[in-house]
Amino acid sequence: FAKENHLPIFDLKLKLDNKRSKEVNLGLVYRYNYDDKAIFGTYAYFDHRYTGSNFSVSGLTAGVEGLSKYIDARANIYIPQNKRKKTNHNNKKTVEIDGTSIFAISGGHRYESSLKGYDIEIGTPVFAFSDSLNEKFGTKIHVARYSFTAKNVKPITGTRFRVEQDLGETLLGDNRYRFHI
Image: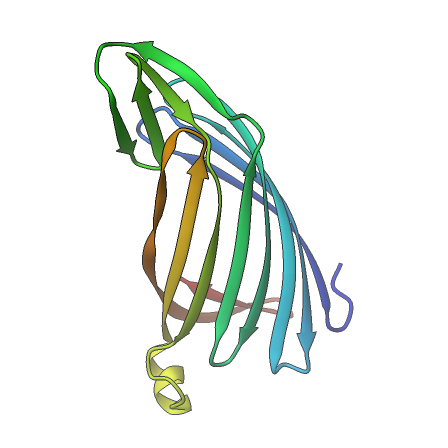
């Protein structure tokens, strides 16, 4: 599909965990390479998640990104379709966070809520503008701000950090592939 500086991507992800949760993400991505100096992209994902408490959640994730030698920046919005589901009844009144799920318990009922929100992330090589050290070690650090909310649920807002390590590249036929963790 790639043509000169244009790169459309079809992306399919499947996530499973040990709490009976399953998630499928189906996305379309478009990136444009500006003379190997910067890459700008936009993307949209349809997400469907089946939680451990039998809550089926669908939603849309949309975002933009700018990638360069020294700076990576991304912004995403998350728009759920399903709002909440009563999962059980007891006499406690509280808010609980379990992994990526939030449970708002009020009036003796326990609800699982899907949250709308956003995140903004910026990253840079650990060795800033030292090309020789960056090529030798290939480590980037990213910081992000996020906020997720829903009606009658305590918001989840915070900062997260992420480290990306370049593992190198390999040739397969005429194509080069880079690997990161």
